[in-house]
Structures are given as structure tokens and as C-alpha cells.
Amino acid sequence: MTVIFDMDGLMFDTERLFIDAWDYAGEKVGIGKAGYMVVKTLGMNGAATSAALEAEFGPCFDREGLRKYEIEYLRDYYEAYGTPVKKGLYSLLNYLTDQGAMLAVASSSSRQTVLRHLKGTGLEGTFPVLVCGDMISRSKPDPEIYLTACALLGAEPSEVYALEDSQNGLLAAHRAGCRPLMVPDLWLPDEETERILCGRFEDLDQVQEFFEASERNNV
Image 1 (cartoon, rainbow, N blue to C red):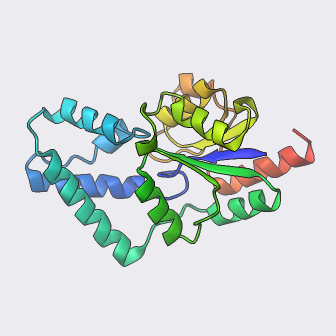
Image 2 (cartoon, rainbow, N blue to C red):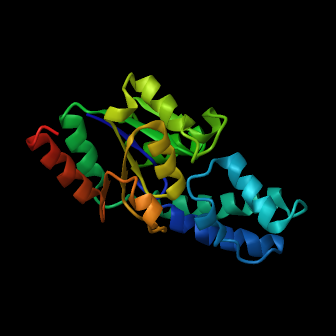
Image 3 (cartoon, one colour):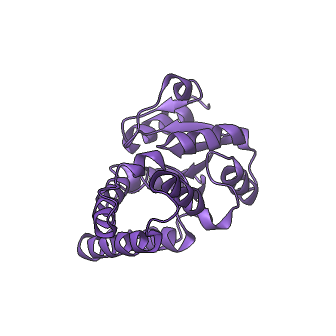
């Protein structure tokens, strides 16, 4: 079995933190609460997110200030509380590891951010393959990140499960030829997205139940 994990909103409950951070940063730089842009940029890498912010606020908004205050907010939160882990993550990873599954992370966040979260949650070394937003040229929903992860894993995309929470991520996985599994976070799928799913679950515990049933049935 081969499983590729998204990170923000799937493994870690960080998307809601981004809303608070962008609200804080937006007010600091004078554009008002900008947290609503988190939903509009779900699954995008840094370059694509910057382009979306510029389209929303114009080319002259204080991008450096926004980033500075976002980092300030998130740093203070993580220092105080650590990275919030999604329900069922540790159990699911333990199960997959015991089954000998090949695992990877395909995250639009930077490699530095991914490594920081994995280390902070005791998951450093769990994923032999990491493909991050600053390691690819095209952002989700382009399939590049999943095609790269599959190639590094030596796996055929059609045999790979992709765990995602965002439309951009699910489309990227589908376009790569993977099997998209969704655990909704901030966004609920529309009818078009529902049609590409191989499964939709309330949480990662249900994902584990799905894999257990699949193993029993030799699917």
C-alpha cells in the first residue's frame, strides 16, 4: 500500500490558525482582516498564494509586512501550544507503518515548515519522501507535486491513495492519476469534486477503518 499525505488541514489543524494569523497581520498592515483568503488559497504553494493576495489587495499592499506579522502570530502560537495534531493521525500512521505501507508528504508548505511540524510532533523520519511547495514549479491543482512524489516512491499513481482536504489538492491528486481520499476541514466538496473521490471521511480514524477493511477484502 502507498499513501501520500497532504499536511495543513489534513495531518495538522493549522488552517484555522492561518485564518487567525492573516486576520491579525491584515489589520497590522492596514488591509483589514484577511483570514477569509485562507479558504481561497487552500492547497496553493507560496507563489500561487502571493499571486492570489495581489489579485485581491492590489500590487501595492504591504506583502512583506503581511508575511512578517503572520510569522509573528504563528511563532508565538507554536511556541506556546505546539502544532495541533488532527484526531486519529498517530493511530493511522502506526497502522500504515505496521502494514509496511510506503508513505510520503505532498504539501504546498515550504520544506522548512514541513520539517518543523514533523519534528515538533514526533513524526520526523516517518515519511521517507517529502515533496514541498518550494521544491516544485507548479502549484496544486497542477499534478506535479503528486507525480513527483509517486516517482520518488517508485509507485504507479493508479495504485496510490492521496489524502487531502482541499479542492486544489484533490484535483492535483486526481489529475496525477492517484486515488483521492478526502477528510474535509474548512471546505466541503461540491458535486464536481465529489465525483472524483474514492472516499470521503469524517476524520482520520475513519480513514484507518477504510484501509483495514480494504486489507481484509484484498482491495
